[in-house]
Length: 514
Image (cartoon, rainbow, N blue to C red; front, side):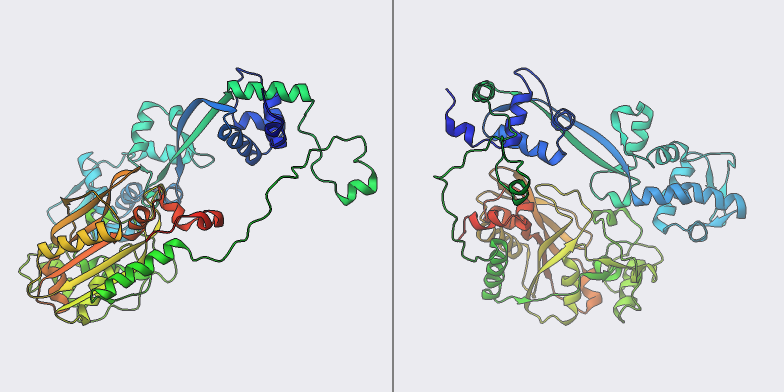
C-alpha cells in the first residue's frame, strides 16, 4: 500500500517518468528526452531522485571510450607532425645536424630526438660521419596512419569501438587520459546507465494512476494565470502544511582553509620558517635547478602548463645559471659527471605554471640558514585527469631541513608525523622512489578506508648537484607531500573535489575535525 505522503512528495518530473514507463521497460536519460520532451538536466534529476527513493534500479551500465583531438593534435594536423616536418625539411634542404633540423622544422629538441629515433629504426633517416641527419627514403610517408586519424577527429571524437584494430593500436600510442596536453588525443570515458522500474516503483505507478495524478498539476499560481484565468479548471498540487520551517544558518569557515591553518600552526610551533613564491616560474627553477635533464623522459613526470605570453623570462640570476649549466653538462664541482649534453640557456628561461612545490625548496637554498628548517604550502599546476585522488591544480606542502647531522632517519620521522598526526592515517608504509634531485628517495603511502592505498608524496636527501650550486655544503632533507590528500584523510572525505566544492550545504554540514 502506497501512502498519500509518498505520492504528495513526488516531483512532477518523477510522476511523468513513472507513468510513462511500464514495468520491464528499459530507459535512460537520452530516451527520456525523446519520450517526455525534457532537457537532459531534467532527465538526470528525475532518475537520481527516483533511484534514491528505491523506485528504480539499474538495468545496465556501460562505459564507452572516445578519443578527442587536443590542441596539440589540431596544430599537428595543420602544420604536420614533428616526423612529417623533419622529413619535409630534409627533402628540401638536405643533411642537417639534429639541432639545425629541429630549428628548421619548428620542433622542440626533445621531440626532434625521439622522432629521429623512430625514423631511424624505420630506415627513413640515418646519421652520416659528420653527425648530420640524412634522408634515406624520400618516398616514405611517416605518420600517415596518425595523420588520417587526426583528420577524422576534426569534426567529432572518435569512438574506440568504431575503429579498426590497427587504428586502435595506432591511436593508443598518441592518446593519454592524464596529461593530454602533451599528446595528440585525449581519452574520454563516457558512462551510460539504463534503468527499469523496481517492484516498489511499479506499485507507486499504479497508485498514481488510481489517484488520477498526471504530473501536470499546478504547483504555483502566477499573476499571469490570475489575469488570463488559465488557472480555472486545472488541478493543483497539494501543499505540505506540516513542512518544517527554514533553518537559521550561522557563518562558518571552510573546513579545508581551517585545516591548512592548523598545518601551518603545527610546523611553525616546531620551529619551521615559512616560504612562498610566484605560481609562474621558469624551467630553470622548476626543473633545471633540481637536476632534471632538459631533453629527457624524466621531464615527463610533470605535465606542465606553458605560459603563452610572455613565453620567456628576461634572464636567470647569476651565478646560479652558469653553475647549474655546468652541473648539467659536466657535473661542475659536485663530484658528478652531469648529464653530458649542451645546456640550452634559452629553453631554461621558458615560463610555466609551477608544477611542483620543490621549486621553492631549491630557491630557498640560496639564503637558507644552517642549521635551518623551512616549509611552504604552495599551489601547483599539472595537466591531469580530475578524479577522486587527482586534481589539475592542487596544494603541496614542501619543506627542507639543513644541518651537518641530519639523515634519513630524521626524514622518516618527519614523514611519520605528516602521515599520522596531520593526515590522521593509521596505516602508513614507505617504499623506495626515484626523483632526479634526491638520493636516497622514498615515497610515503597511506591507506584510506574507502579509496585504499595512495601515495601521499615523495621525499629524500637533496643530491649535491642541487645543493652545491646554491652554496650549500651540508645534507638537506626535502619533502613534497600532497596536502590535499592529507586533508582528504583528515576530514573523512572520499573525493578531493569535495575540498573545493561550491556546494555550500556540504560545507555547512561537514563534520569538524579536531
